[in-house]
Every structure is written in structure tokens, then in C-alpha cells.
Image (cartoon, rainbow, N blue to C red; front, top):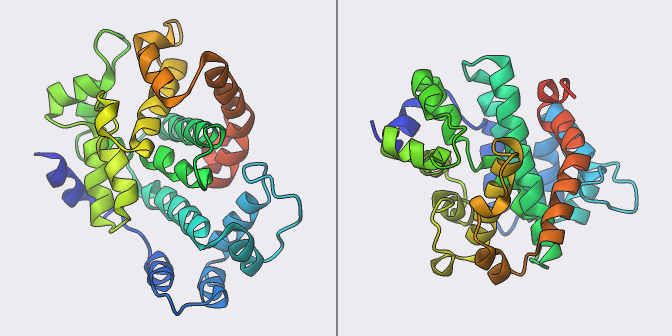
Length: 281
């Protein structure tokens, strides 16, 4: 079975709710107002609460108090609210995944780490609306949960603690596709924007010159996360060439700052998006 087959087989299990589809319709409709979008969000109290918690967290560092959903939409903007809605419903969709709790906790920790790293680097590099990069990191590896649902034994086989045999290379050898490619196929079925799908699809391609800035940054952030969480005894240069960092304007100090930021913000974000994962800290 290829990546498309895996995604299609789980697409009726891992689904985005009707509330998400309604919000997406409103955001795509130029005639919709902030109140229209806010009203649909308020129908789901858990979603509304999550958006307000994130909006008031240090993740956005907004100087005032955001106490209503309509103010959150006004202050953060429709695009950013859409990204928060995607984050909420994506993590909610995978609550049906059949797996050990410890495995799921580790998965979401890795995903949040990648999300925080890419967001921090994007801000430092002055990417416009860099907070939107967070969703790329959060969803970059959801294909792993797709494979876990269908063939958990293959996920076990794809584990690698050997830096000479990197996880995505092992995935390609054993599955004939990577988790990133499977992630992209599920996002297509969810009808998410291609601005999300393209970087996730190409996250393991090393030729950065052929890719857009978001794809380049996801490539870097993912490898920093993998070095920190899997190959912490190895130097980062085993995963990323110095030339690749220089090309994007990233130096070692910036990498260190990004990992420190990740360590500071991880628990806060996990407690909002995946409370069970935050319990281990």
C-alpha cells in the first residue's frame, strides 16, 4: 500500500469536524464578517476556550487581554485564527488513534517541538506572519499516526537510533514512502491549503535551492528537533550542512536560542493542545 492508500484507509477515522468545515467555508467567503466566524467558533466551547488560551499565551505575547473570540479574530487576524482552528481540530481528530498513551505523548511532544522551532526561526528571520509556520511543524509528521493506525508493526520497524540510517531514509526503504509524504496525502483529503501541503510533502528533500522558504525552514526545524530528541549525542552538522544554515541566515547562536525557546514554551502549548502529553513534565 502506498502513501495515498494509507491516507484513504484512515480518512474516515481521522476526520475534521463539521464545525471546521463551516469555519473553512466562512473564511473562504469574502462576504463573511468577523462576527460570522466568531459565532461558529462559539458553538464549540472547547474550541473557543482553546483559541482564547493560545491567544493569551506567551506564544503570541499580545500585550493586552483577549477576552472574547471576536477580539481574538480581530487582533490575530482571520488567517491566524484559521491556523489555530486547524491545530485544534487536527489534534482532536487523532484522539481516535489506537496506540499506547506513551507513544502518543512522545509523538505530540516531537510535533510541538518542531512547531515551536520553526515558528521561532521564522520570527528571527522576519518571515511575514511567522506564527503561521507553527501549523507546518505541528502537522509535519501526522503520516506516522496514519501508518500507526493501519500497520503499527511497521512504525516499530521504522524506528532508528542510528544516525547513519536516518528515520525518513528508513521509512522510504521499508514503506516506499516517508511519513511526510503520507502526511501530505491526508492533508489533501482534508482539503487544507496547498501552502501547508507543499512544504510538508517536500520536508525530506535536501536540495534547498529548489524549494520555497517555508519548505526550507521546515527542513531545518525538523532536523534540529530530531537531533535534540533522537540523536542528542551527535552534533547538528551530522544532520544539516553548515552551508544550508548559512544560506538561510541561521547561525549556531540562533539554533541555541530556538531550542531554548522550545524548552520554555513546550509545556504551555502541550497543556492547551494535548493536555495528556503535558502531564509527564
